Image 1: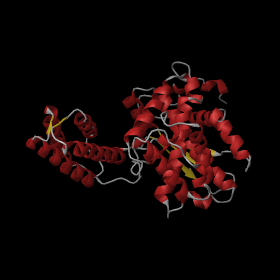
Image 2 (image 1 turned 120 degrees about the vertical axis):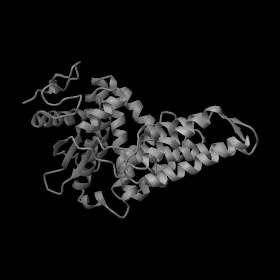
Image 3 (image 1 turned 180 degrees about the vertical axis):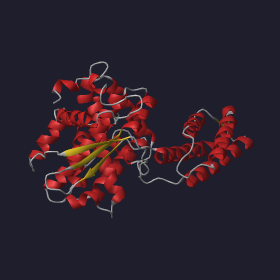
Length: 369
């Protein structure tokens, strides 16, 4: 048996030495690692948000007992959220760069670095044409992001060029979001079970987690536990459906896109909160860096392409207010009766901060289940 103290995240993470290779994500002892995960999800229940969630739910239902198994895999699994195809992304990007190049040639805008970055993007797109429809050089999305930044420094030479510049930047945001969606690798997954005493199975893709940790320069353990927190919330959310006898609604196909926006918004916010304020931050300060990284991702991606970005409406520090703090629980309650209405509330709030309207005042009465 593993003592609860084994979860204390002291430097070196001694319990991982015999269970997993943090460099490659290769699992050495799955049984021990599963025991660690079982202990961890009981620890997560002590977070302030988890306690508040328990009190909220207890007013209507018995707080659920989460009974999950764990699987650990070194496979690479791509996310299957709605995303444009590689062909569509490249076509849109080509048209956009042609418009920008024409504006440079005609003198509508002036910016020396633009020609260089456009030529580099075109070269990489040509090299990537021979690749699979689902893969491309990851540095290409970085170049698109750089093009977006350079456009902000352009000199506008006439009145008509200003609105066009804003339009191009908005289109580049969508291209960049599409690229990120297409290239995204899944870190974890929850699969529900209809067995009476079983919630489901959580799969953690350990090699993908290791690579994500390296890319962010954050310890493996931080990303591992944050992924576990995210998937644990999915399990808790599903168990609440199950206790009410409505588990069939968990995977309704007719509203698949809206349902996944709501599910991922709630789970992503729960993960971010645990990194920013809860269990993970208390045990390991690097969690704050991961919380910031999550926020940056949400701010750069479009909710229609990337359901996780819906968590921005709950975690956005600029627009946060007591009303928004209640939205997490309202969305949870709405999810039991109407995925579409909950998704509508998320989208209406998500787009408001991007329009420059300032602080958002949300009338929750408009979104009663």
